[in-house]
Image (cartoon, rainbow, N blue to C red; front, side, top):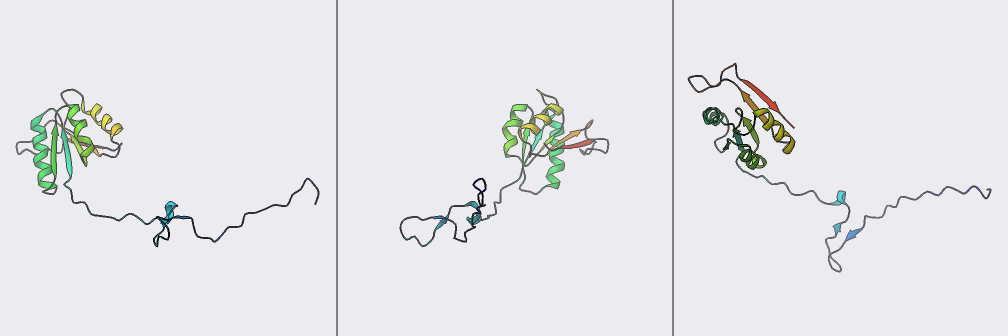
Length: 150
């Protein structure tokens, strides 16, 4: 070989076990240092009620939607109502979904929907735009339901 050429050296891949951290001397249960060697966390069932946020300045529209959703969703569903943006922002982090029944006292529905999509992109936000409910308290087919995920 000439002085300008050197042989290629390759690292041998050792079959040695991964390094492990021991708690004290002679610990019979070593802890893995690398993430993929760590055991998966135990899964557990959390039986908490679902929280649904109803937002809008018109308390009548919120009540009508609450009545409709109460008949559809499980009995342990907890409903929070908000008429102002500050109340919506307070309840949004703990909510599973949000329904906007129209403009709020301090913001239009579209603006609130964008704010929620920005702050809580994982929160499904539904806007119910309509002229109101029929005599029986149900939204009719002319009402529009828009779903926005962040």
